[in-house]
Image (cartoon, rainbow, N blue to C red; front, side, top):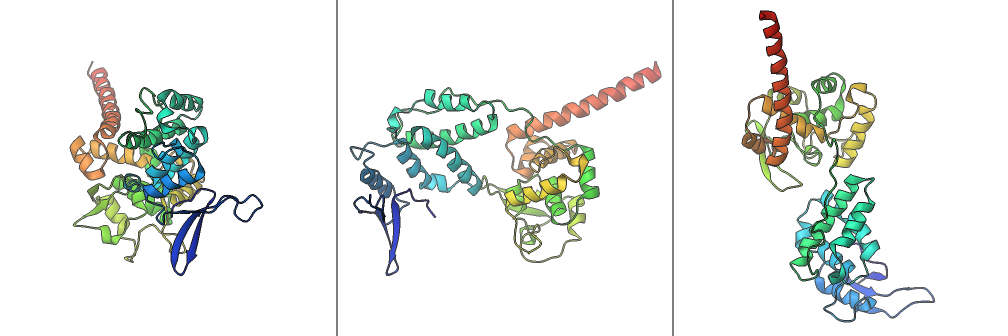
Length: 337
């Protein structure tokens, strides 16, 4: 469902939908009622709405808010994962609040930089805003709504830490203490390296010749992820019923966000898991596969992660292994010397 702006009203009569611009309807300040096109997902709907609102003096003048409206109803936006759509919409509220009434061609990177720099105390949020703005900017440039890139020269913040791989001790604690549906989800994440949004959808129907055939929700990429012996042992205790492996007590499926909340509650009772995140298990899976001798390309086929991220986590694993080897070698030298 499209969220209609304030003043736009949907009327259903004889099974058909009609849309009107009627600000102040039912009040003493009611304005004229103006009929709008019947399809709120069409560009024509939003163009006529802007004309009715008096926000543009000509049909070829677009406000920043109007461009965002059109982008949110475009096929390009609809291709995005639902979580990404929600993230972008939240960031667009900031863009609308600051510049929604401006002519789109007036907006410049300096304006975006001002917002990003003002969010310095929350760098992750600033980067999310920059990412969403970049998306609507690219879409708008291709349609001549913006005179140039809105993010040209605007640098993202370098965030520290991120989602760290779980340590061997933390993995052991998960095996020792986790139970029920939370254990299932964590074991699936640990041994497949998939995102939480995919973990909560996995079920028996996704098993294909000793692995999971997964179409990742975020990227739309299809991967075949082998079921490791450790995970196979876990799955041997699971009932073979329809639906996802990870379900609530009521039998309803989890969303990624809801499962994360349940994991957070369980994690708070296990001191060894302090600081861990579900997403960190993607890095953990990379480290484990690297230790097993897989190449970057092979890990990419298994997990469906970008090569850049795999290399980043692999360097961590390689340096750790190299450091341990150096300690052993030095110990041998002292013993023989």
